[in-house]
Amino acid sequence: MALRKYAGYAWNLISLVGMILAVTATGLIIGFLSYEGITGVEKPYLGLMTYFLFPGMLIMGLILVPLGAYIVREKRRRHPDEVIPPFPRVDFNDAHKRHLFLFFVVASIGFVLIVSVASLKGYEFTESTTFCGELCHQVMEPEHVAWANSPHAKVKCVECHVGPGAAWYVKAKISGMRQLYAVAFHTYPETIETPIDNLRPARDTCEHCHWPEKFYAGRQKVFYHYAPNEANTPREINMLINIGGTPKSEHHRGIHWHIGQEVSYIALDRQRMNIPYIAVKEKDGSVTEYMDTEKPLSKDDVAKAQKRVMDCLDCHNRPAHVYRSPGVEMDEAFAARRIDLGLPYLKKTAVEILTRPYKNKEEAKATIAKELPEYYAKNYPQVAKDKAKELAHAVTVVQDIYNRNFFPAMKITWNTYPNHIGHFYSPGCFRCHDGKHKTASGKVISKDCNMCHTVLGQKQENIPAGTVVKEFVHPVDIGDELHKANCSDCHAAGGQDVPGGEKHAKK
Image: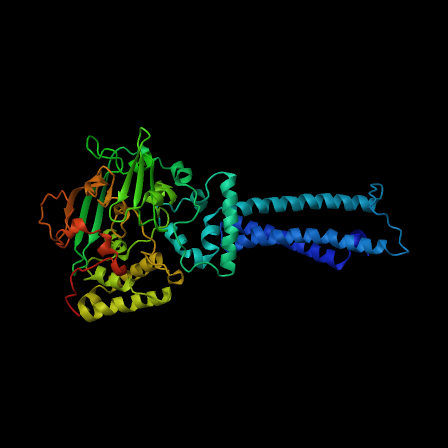
């Protein structure tokens, strides 16, 4: 048989299996690459097969072909009737060997090209957000969904988590192997702990795009809120955020001063909430130390403790993975006119339903779809009839809020990970700016709100129209607690971000 003659020693089961694997893998790689190029579709498991499984099959097949041939040749050499030299003779005057050699060269070039393209595409695939966020679906779903709805949704995961350079790329891939093992054998924690250990310093990543010291003035921002009452009453806070400071004032250095100057601190917990010691390196090289007066550390404790130099992530600790409270989500939906303000108590009712514990997303969606219309059918039947379309749309919006901020499979809710920007739902700035950190000479880290922001105006139901507001007015009179307590003491209590408010007019 001509084929058997040309195959020679390779005419054996091992080599034939290798040939089949190699040819099949080659066809699949070409086919899947063509499909991806034509459709533009990039799916995690499709990429996993195209760039890892099929090239692995190809390489395995290419190993099996010569291995089978070698085994057969060695077996024949040991036969007494066979005279086979230890090494193959290459005689290009023999047409059979010449053709076999040419086939080997052409096939090798083809296979090398295919494996090279697959390797390059595989590298590109491992750098993609599809690979990072969707391959380990259940584990990474919360972070991937949060990233997709964040201001950094156009920034690839690797640009922040790996950054440029070979050293951090190798570290990331070694870490990735550990994570792959954890996913495969289900040894990962039910809720991923943060902050991430050994994360690359923000100065190597964030500051490739952001230049903190460049900010030299304030930034005006209007916060839109809606009361948890029957009318969903609009509230508005017009505020100047002193990012770069307030020129010609005692607070001229602004919030980003923390990055422009070397500030280090000691945290006693993983999430860096309890900070008893802060040190500031002054321009002249001297160090100013601030100690928590309620829980001071000894000199030995300070000397032994690990000190962290402050960078962007100490405040912007959730820059690309933001989970937002149901109240804030409802406020934005009202402000963007995605839901109707004319549905009484919509904010209060929706937030109450959203913040209940659910076994899974399906149960949550079903409860929202059932209880929100039932509430209006029972308490506001005319509204339920007249605004049936608006109510149905509100159900969809509330379900979407749940999908973005609650992940029962990983035991993650909107407030699982404290966000240190501001101080509404976590201590944030007040971890240090609490009026309790003092130097030996009595200098205090101030809790003065005007250090970071200035209220330019405020509108809400307890402020008479036309009133000029220069300091924040709480919607409910809480007396001195406004200055004594932290906002997060109430607004994050029990996972409910709309404490108090009006009671429902009807039951």
